[in-house]
Image 1 (tube, chains in turn cyan, brown):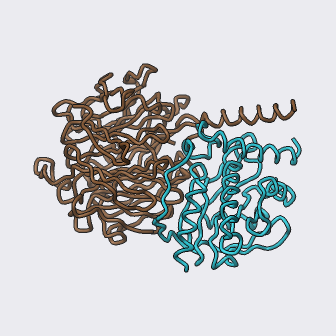
Image 2: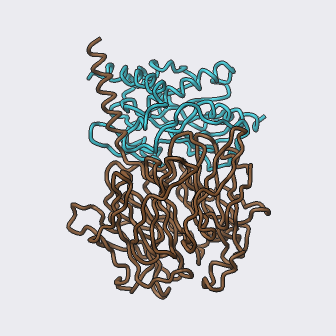
Image 3: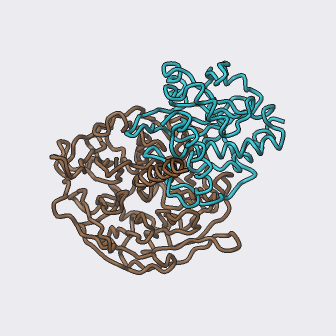
Length: 216
Length: 404
């Protein structure tokens, strides 16, 4: 399958999975958590988001070749996801949910001035800059508000380690990796960690609002 | 068009394959699933006379292995008299957290590098100094974090509470139980409905004494319902004395579950009503003198397994009608069965027979296996019997288990 074809499948999968999520046992490989949620989750508008730890700083490169340093986002809330584009299930589902979150943030005029979305590939060998660009385009990513980042394996490894992430190739070309997203407050502290399979963009939006209220 | 259909077909087939991964009931829903049948069983082991070091035992549970059913190795905890008790995986299943009820030590053990030979990667020598709480009990994975319950405050008295840590053992925050419901024990989250329920046992001042000296009134009879995202206590529910395990229905979105009252010899049903409030009701009488020490579920949510520690039997309850359990089967695995662990495919259940050094009345400690038939009935495996009395350090009390 050509990279272009693989990507369109991934994007298609995201849309399809989002629609099918209520019926799927779990849309990911052995690296996944337990079954996905059916339909909507109960939400909380007053989340208690404790300080988990400082978000390790990093510098990665977006698909346009621009350096992106996490600490440059100080003053903004950041949602950081670790994905790879050929992931057949959870990643496109998650990315589609992030696309829905992006739409909400745009509507509220919070993107990119007060919130940044970052998706980091854990598979830089297959996810070239061109591949990431197509993937981002497929999900309608805002070029300033939602950055897709990569680096060489050598430079990426310490970033993954700092976030307690790891990768393990599994037969069939999939990659086992901890399925998490990190919500980082304007002071650069991790305040929430989401499981990919239980991620609800509506709750993430409420969590972002709570962090923005704190920083007023 | 045809090619598109083929792509969708491949995608769907891939998803179905992925869905075959094994989800063990009773683990946190945030814990990664096993990709296939279990190969190793980890058992927390208390040196029986508390003179030698406690350890974690690794049992070979791969039927294709030449050493099937035998202890492969032990991980020495480096000290004695800890009473290692329960354990829990981190969300990514790379580490086991194992704490102790009679010392203040907590061990973080790597099981990813080589699942057959786990290695302690961190020891927290004084978890009490760190948290102000004593006796960590339940180790519940959250994304990138661990939620622990504690049976007591630092002085061994109520209130107990909860503490959250990063996966590598950095404290995030502490919540103490409220004055009106100070006893703590288990915790379980139902993410889809944003609810956490905690249960209640007895504190160090009581459980550290021989059972004959226990004050049976020094324990809880409450389940606490929390708003999970807000970490806010919403309701205090009442049950028979000492409700232990909290088992949410495994069906996504269902807002009900069960707990076992150890001193009430009863099974309790909790559920959310139309008004959004939870209530409890006694769902089954387990028989006088049962002392239900553990409660487990089948992956299809059809059966509950109850270990009667004092009556030396395991009861199977059919919960097709969740609030009206029906006794389905009974097996006798040996004297004083306690902890149980059901495999991801729901076909096997491993059993140990030590509860607590101050409560045990058996002297022969073991790990045994029962097979679970498609009809939900149990059949003890006569060939699987891991003898815990013949370690180089002598007998050891086998308690909690995890599969890998």
